Image (cartoon, rainbow, N blue to C red; front, top):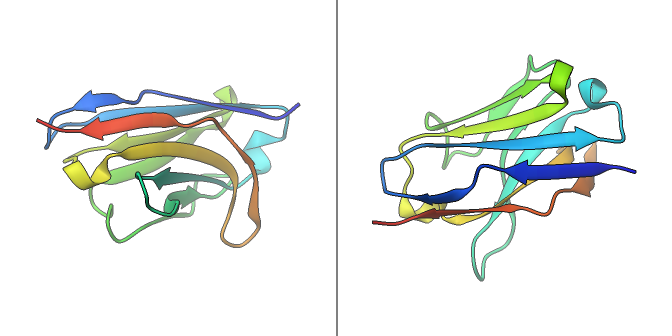
Length: 118
């Protein structure tokens, strides 16, 4: 069955960095667009970044451009989100998902909590 398992979240001070990982199984990862979403308390889930199957096409929400980098390692079925210059407003549960705005979203991980606080 399809599994998406996120890791790498935690507590970090403003200005700090974290790298999230998402290990995928049960589908053809290298042929699948992948995305990262986040959901803060009492807010709607929002798209953070997406990447094509080859990794050649990426896009970001305006709120994270220049600070976050999405990447993937198809040999290991792993999706990454490198987050730098973190702000308190980046605090949220971060989810990886199989899909993109073009193709829709089919499967979701359980999420990993990121808290940015001094």
